[in-house]
Amino acid sequence: MALSLERGPGGPPLQLQLYDQLRGLILAGRLGPGAALPSSRALARELGVSRTTVLLSYDQLTSEGYVEGRRGAGTFVPEVLPEVNLVTDARGAARRGPPVPATVSALAERLVGEPTEASIAARPFRQGLPDTGQFPFDLWSRLLARAWRTPSEAALAGSEIEGDGELRRAIAKHLREIRGIDCDWSQVFVTSGSRDAIDIAARTLLDPGQAAVMENPCYPLVAHALGAAGIEVHYAEIDGDGIAIGQAERAGVAARLCVVTPSRQFPLGVTMSLARRLELLDWARRHDAWILEDDYDSEYRYAGRPLAALKSLDEEGRVLYMGTFSKVMFRGLRLGYLVLPESIVAPAALVRRGTGEGASPLAQPALARFIESGRFTAHVRRMRRLYRDRQEALLDALHRHARDLFTAERQDAGMHLIARPTPALARRMDDVEACARAAAAGIYAAPLSMYWRRGPAPAGLLLGFAGFDEAAIERGVEILAGSLAG
Image 1 (cartoon, rainbow, N blue to C red):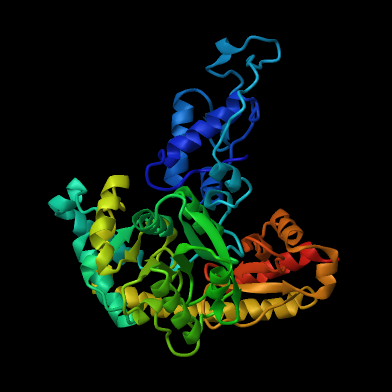
Image 2: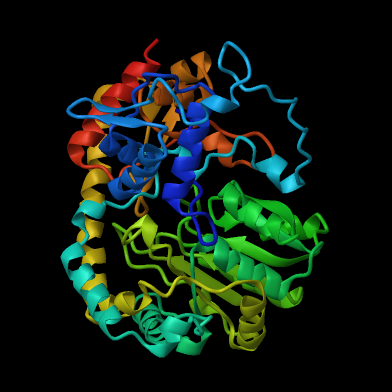
């Protein structure tokens, strides 16, 4: 079944979306009389939602007569549907006029074919997934209960548009100690994720039609977020030292913003050199421009000394710094942060109040206490050791089962590896076809070429290892190798 749920603030409840889509499939005849629906557990696992969400949808469909439960057998489409009186021909298909062609925005056109979170199941080797089985949910549930036993008036009213004050203080303290960023808590905005942070930055600093520079390759949804704010996006290439900002400068791009991932470039894993960091800061100073530093998985560094953030070198207040809790805790938390230079805190607050309602306050007090207690840092340390071992397990499995197909190198940080095809495999197929074959076998791997915005793209597969235990990694590599065997 082609089901796709829209996540994020402002969207319809997940159970309502699932109900609408299943009802539509039944009425369209794609789920005909007698057809069996998946079990609630199986469908919940496939869609990445709770079983309660699926059960609520099934209950609504049952109460309205679109499905019926059979004890010990499952849930089925009945022989007679409640809309039977709408049927106007002998075949049971309602007559409809031809659909009106839709005229959509340029952004919507660009998004066609891009992978979405709802369409990608949590199966090996999806990148960016933490291992939620290791998270201390018993402690988390107590912190949530304690926070909402006596909630603050501000939380109930939703008036803290920049985020819960205690959480902002905890984040500022954490960044000073772990990332070397000297900031006041008033500079920290709590966001609902990276897109929210990008939107705040773009709408505060740039007018529609002005330009920003991004890395090539890059994470496509960051470019889409800038485009949604009306920003014209240009690209600068990545080399062994990071973004070559001089390339954009020589091309005459009058950019007011540069978005970078200096600690570990996505997807290549390059760490920006000190010389290139200083060059980027100098570029921002000379062009009266800004830098948005995306520190998306800096917590997971497995070798060498911890790297200071680019923001820690910023003496003129030109770097905005954003991070997320999704890769440390769990994706459904939907909380991140944006650290702003003091000079733009006030206008950013006005933009935030004028364009949105801020991140959900539900988990913020509990997260503040989780960080303050030291359990957040302890969890990061534990997961860092676990993910380092899983990277080794993936490398070992690739060597034993797929050395004729791929080469891969150990990474000092991060949650994914790049498996590059051997010449023999590259002659038979490109990385897009390789990923399609893997998907047909139940394995998710993103093609490296997908992240290139311009120019020739090298082939490779992004293999996430953090969210999968060693047995799943071993079996996943075996299936991947089998799907690509000549």
